Image 1 (cartoon, rainbow, N blue to C red):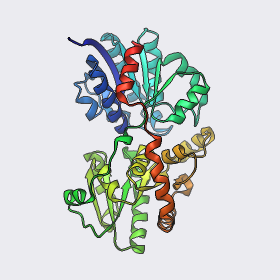
Image 2 (tube, rainbow, N blue to C red):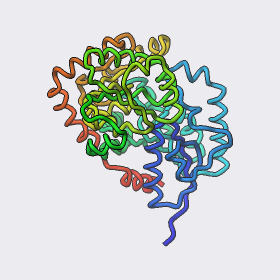
Image 3 (tube, rainbow, N blue to C red):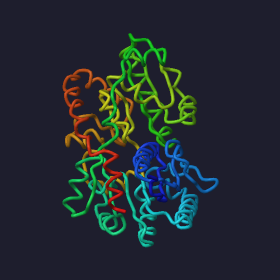
Image 4 (tube, rainbow, N blue to C red):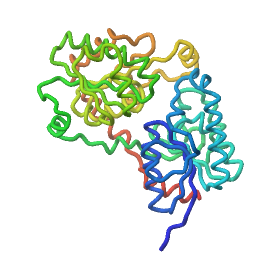
Length: 374
C-alpha cells in the first residue's frame, strides 16, 4: 500500500536543531511520503529539502539581542523567501525547530492559512518572557518538549504539549581504546574536552578565555591533554587561527564531541546542549557563557531562573559549575577544575541521574501524535 503524500515545511538552522529536525522527519517518513521545503543543515538536507536559491542555514546563526538587529535586513529577506515558498507549495504542516523568535512569525502567518503548526523544542518560557504562552496557545498547534519540566510548566498553563525526551538519552559510551586508536591519542594522558560552541560569535568571545585556562591547567598538571571538537570545518579553521592554540597540547576534529567527551572526565563547555551531552557521557561539565555587555544587561533583567545549565536545570539544583558573564575567567575555570578533582565522587554520583531524566516518548510516538493532529 502506498503512503499518503504530504508537504512539510521546516526550519532547522542551528547545529542541534538540524539533528532534531532530521530525526523527526525520518520518523514521519515511516508514515508519509514527504515533500520537504524550507531551511536545514546537512542532516535535514539528506531528505532532499527544497530551499530558496542562495540561502544558507548558517545565515540564521545569530545569538543574543544585538546580533539579530545588526543582521536584520538579511534575516527579513530570508523570512520573506521562506514564507513565499511555504505558501506557493501549499504545505500541510510547518515544523519550526528551536529558534522560537524567528519561527513564531511563520507559526502566526501559516496558522492563519489553516496550516498545522508544530514547534519542536519549547521556547524557554519557564525561564523568561512567560507572556509568550499566549502566542504559543494561539499560533502553535503542537509543542514538542525535550524535557519533562517543560511539559509540567505547560500543564500548569493548560496548554497541550508532548514529552519527546532528548536524543542524548540514546548516547552510549564507546570503548576508550577504539577512540584512542581512531585519533591516535596517548592513553596515559589526562584528557579534558573544550567545547567552544557552534557559532563563530561564541568561539570569538569564549575560546580565548578557554585557551588561557587550558594553559594554566597545564601548569598545574603537565599530563593534561585537550580535546577540541568543532561543529564544522570552518569553525575548526577559526579555532586553529586563535592566538595561544599552539601553547597547549591538543587534538581538534570535526563532529567528534561524543568521542572526546567519552575520554574526558572533565569538560569546559559553552552553555547549551553540549553541557547535557557532556553529562550524559560521564564528563563533568564546567558550564560557561558570556555575551556582550548590552545583551547581558537586558537578558539578566528578563531571566527568572537562577540556573542556566541544562544538567543543573534537570537536577533542579546547581551541582555543576556555572560561570556566567563577569564570573567567567581563566582563573574561575581553573578553580572549578580543581574543585571537581577534589570532589569527583560527588559529581559522578549526580552524573548517573542525568540520563534517566531525559528519557521521553521518542520520535516515533511524536510522529504518530502529528498524524493524529492531521
